[in-house]
Image (cartoon, rainbow over all chains, first blue to last red; front, side):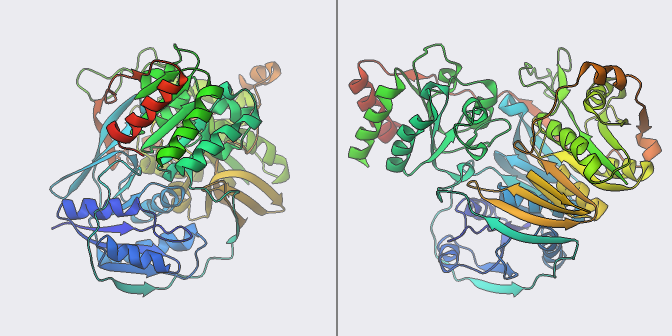
Length: 317
Length: 257
């Protein structure tokens, strides 16, 4: 029987929900699993671990500040101890950083940004989009164990609630070498869910005409409990910061619902959002390329449609 | 000490990608090859940091078929890099195998104070090379870097994480940094720059010269076109009717509310 270790990434309050997708995958595929996390274990993290059926958790270190040098070394020692076939995680800024550095320390195969994950005997068969989603492929993995895979959130079955008793083993971290120190983390404004993890995204483009009209989208986002994204054009024009950019040279997102407002749909933008489950496009140009990728489309004036939509959503939510 | 910039040649975003009949890859005809957009930020930063770090030379490294990748190296040289280095390789290597080759190449050419890469390449979007190369070179790294400040040999580096948050690192000594948008505005090669670039040296290394294996632990098979989305449902009627229908569909058909 194969064994996986799963990275449970914590945000400020709990474990990111997408991490548990890999717990569910391991159960569904009859893969034995243990989990690992870094920093102090939040109360809610513990509750959620038990809710989603985690039984063994390695809690490493006490600092919540990410340190690529010490964390990757600790992950390598965990692998030497547990000897897993697979290391699995949900794709994020932090997991990408950690997994890639560790893969070189372990000399192991790594597949990132995956959208599907099959198992053939003791070999993982992840699927991955290429060329900005213009095609996809299967990744054939070889080399020394473990095989490492990072999945985009919301692509495989989400975790089913079950009950378990959690056993926690704590481990310490080495001190960071003098050549490298983590100084601080500067928090972004808002405290909204990051685009890459958002379940719903409302996104705006040139069709909004000027920066202050993003307020229309903010209102809709508040009602939907959504995050707000933007096209490259309006980021380049300085209407909104770069961390809101969806698409090539911005973020790749895959929410359950993506509402594109006044976005024409350049290839670069479509690359970053076309794996969203449901896409709504609102644009006054019936020939806008965004409509070809959309589930539902409204050809109309964003300044009329968006406020109306916010109002109707408020009634049903 | 030198600065090395790693660049990758990728199909231009507008390129139509065609899958080979046997699904083993994409057809290479009619591809317009360009420098990966994130790598342009790395090139610009290398040129800017050359003086403040007191670096001797800025080398641009590119792995790929030597004839093809020289075009991109000439662009990097025209922007201001001093010398080009080709790792001649017909097949695509995965990021770890690429990192091993680049490490071998750097060690052959000279000491480094800084290696710059793009945050990721837009073809495979693996975003792993920066970290892997740093681990192999046994130096620190920072990925998605949007600001670099220098004070002697100490770098203060800001990287973009989630929700607009930033992490700040202090790094002393050699390191590998992955550039993202916002770090700078890459220059266009000037005409004199292009003329000068023609005379700048480009060295070509074979995998045998570097004594590294071309074995990749990951390879891409079974290429497929993207899954077809169901046809777009365009909602008709006046604004009120359109919006009411949309909310109903989102709630009852798509079940995403």
